[in-house]
Length: 316
Ligand code: AKB
View (cartoon, protein in one colour):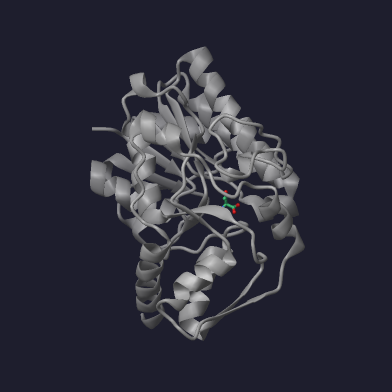
């Protein structure tokens, strides 16, 4: 059985990936790590350790202690937070990744790297964005994602390390709120739709971005890590997406369930600028062909599920 370590386990993906991995591989085989211990399934449902991913000695000691063979390296700072403090974003995202790669390399661990649609930039074709295309991002977060993709590919080429990764779009989920991202509006809108029947969007009308519902993201992440390596032509940066919409599109979907829902705008120039630099919709054919990426949720199916789950959460 695999012995897995997850970093950044308290984040939006981590709080769901850790239980998903524990269910799949056995709770005792999945070590969750994070900078802080937060009561809940991540710290209580299996092994947990506090970890700063920039601390190479601590990372190496944990890999050795738990005989880890696979790392899901989720710790990182998102786009809007990264623009607020670019130096901190570089330190966490790049130094953290470098430390993880250097600890994983001599120990033969596989490593999953979460890249993002942020790895693209204003010069990238915006519609049906190809798997291999121009990548000149204009945010520090995007710079760390392109550099991370390249670094992981390099470790595979140079050291034959089993590095793999996805370019996540905006992820929509109800277990934990995202923090500091540009696509976060597409989560907040469901919470406000249930609580207030209206939402004020910080992203403007007509700004299309790729999104995916968390169940599809979890399945895709583990499917990639389980994929037959002989089928992988790409490694560290697969385009994946479940849907593409703008604020009007998600509002129209919510209105099918909450007919009185109202959307207004108070555009945040920083996050709008970031959104403008990202693709409208990705071409995910490489992920489909090389390892069978197969998302199930479209916008309306996700909306129906999110509204039920957020309602349950707000009642609790
Ligand atoms: C963000 O908005 O920063 C993230 C991402 C798309 O990487 N959700």
